[in-house]
Amino acid sequence: MQDNHATLNNYLYKPLFFDKSNPADVIAIQELIDKQEIIFVYDQFERQLRDLFVCRNPTFSTNEEQFLEFVGLVCNQQPMEELGAWVYYPWRKTLVHILEREEFIEVRTNRNQLKISKSEQELLSTKTIGIIGLSVGQSVALTIAMERGCGKLKLADFDDLDLSNLNRLRAPIFSLGFPKVVLAAREIAEIDPYLEVEIYPEGIKEEDYQEFLIGSQKLDLLIEVCDNFEVKVESRIRAREFGIPVIMETNDRAMLDIERFDKIPDLKIFHGLVGDLTVEEIHALDKSERMGLLMKIVNAKDLSDRMKQSLPELGKSLKSWPQLASEVVLGGGISAWASRKLLLGQDLKSGRYYVDLEKILSAHPVN
Image (cartoon, rainbow, N blue to C red):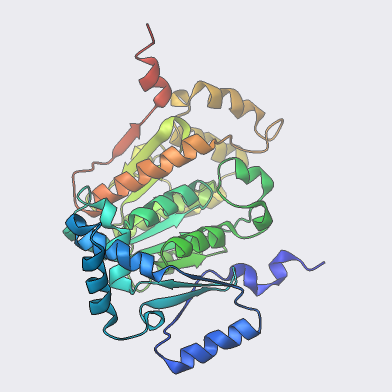
């Protein structure tokens, strides 16, 4: 039986675009069909046109005559199958007919208005967000992608999907053994193939920080939600060097950390909870010293009662940190909200914040 990691197909995450008004693309599509590389074809283009029409003309939403006139103008005597784009998802052997980029984005973000204005949406489309850690980070990345809270996402995680991840990470059981970062990138592409995504399937190593944080375009925001202590600390030190703000969400009591290295260049990492650690000092720490610092980072006395009960059982009766889907999904929403505020230049100060549902809801007991 072939190992999942032995196949390059496990790392495919970018769809291919075809234009049926181009004869060469028509031939290429047919060749893929003949080879059974395309098995499923979905063409709901007219439905998308109707959606586009209603978005632009909400008062005429039920006017069929107006809609047909709109379709005539859009088609301009060109066959409908030659309009828009045909998107091929090789990992699903699927071809989908969608609107052109600008119209697709216009319709897909229409229900964001006016919670996100058009000018704000355009500004967000120029931003690049990096996310390290694609277990908790999957919910963060997908929520940002659904809102189109940026124009580009850079995703980093070295880990593969295990069955024990499926209590909080959305994925089918036939994806066990696949890289988490690939699964997240694929799901984003299936929501919005026009959103640019770049992946780092081996995670972030010391030599990768320059490329990940700067590359061809400097990150506007780093979201760090990984379990690796060294990466957790070093990513902040590097982000501070480049003036990149950092957000972290731990999902226990919905703790949100915001570090505005873009506004305060000499801000101490983790609000000074670990002192002035250097990269060299991080690598010299033993396991117990790292755990001690990690407890300082999360401010152990402020953890939830259930998390406090779990800590002594780590590595004994518990495989790893307990995490729940409800808390992880909540964290995805909180992180996306905070990132939008930050990227739009709205007031968002450095600090540690809690959206503790246990505390909030128990404050108003039922009479």
